[in-house]
Amino acid sequence: MIPPAAAPDFLGQAGWGNAAIVPLAGDASFRRYFRVIDGARRAVLMDAPPPHEDPRPFIAIAEHLLDQGFAAPRILARDLQQGLVLIEDFGDLRVKEHMDDAPGEELAVYARAIDLLADLHALPAAPVPPYDRAVYQREVGLLTEWYCPAIGLDVDVDAYVRAWDAVLPIVEQSASPTVTVLRDYHAENIMLVDTPAAHGLGLLDFQDALAGHPAYDLVSLLQDARRDVPPETEAAMLAHYKAIASPSADFDAAYAVLGAQRNAKIIGIFTRLWQRDGKPRYLSFLPRMWGLLERDLAHPALAPVADWFAANIPADKRHDALREFAA
Image (cartoon, rainbow, N blue to C red; front, side, top):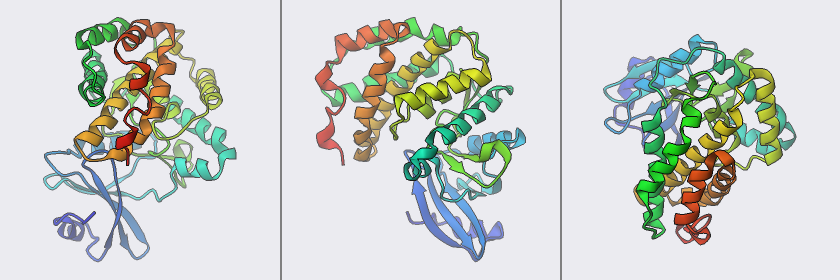
């Protein structure tokens, strides 16, 4: 976590020349984050190095969300050639740690996160690409591309594609509106911020936003890859969303399909993070992901995909089958 060589000049030109640069965090991508401290002033330096990262989508979605009244970080300075962006600092109070420390507030905090989604879904979608069949298939393909070989399985990939083709029309032909899908809306990417706007919640990590089905971000929040959400909490929050957003009658089926789609994708991504990127700690999340995926597959709408999993990935090749490699 050494700051990029161009950071001092960039900060100097942005009016932060005397600031200290302190490592803050990295994530599952090539992006890195640093806290910039100048007396009482605080900001966050995003290092999104080209060609691996492009900060322009983050900037565009941040400005779109701010225009719509949501608490996204304000962009304070940018250097697109260097991949450096100085953004508003939302502090350190993430929803995940807050709920871990104050479990009695879990329902109230999740309800606020659901309220925010309902507000977002009541607005026209951002000018972003569609979450379409090609994207869905490319994402679920990460499981057969990375997880299955890692576990020593030679599976029927063509049948896998056909199984998903059989269930994805439920999402594509849904009566639900097309909305802005943040795609990584969960407790580690939501901050508690001191603002009356947007239910006091600050949004992060939305640079991959697409226009798609409203159930997706609910799955991201309530079937969290990194945090156990009690089934009763998930059920209560889905009921809360339905009460305030009045989704279409096929919402439960769409939620299950997108849950299975997202969880299959994440199993592939976390395997790739271990094998390609040398980040074995993500393997520790796989038992949770398999549990969520199997629960989604039990929905009747997923029958073709469930049949494929039953025929291709035995029970002993799921859950913690890669545990010996986890850090």
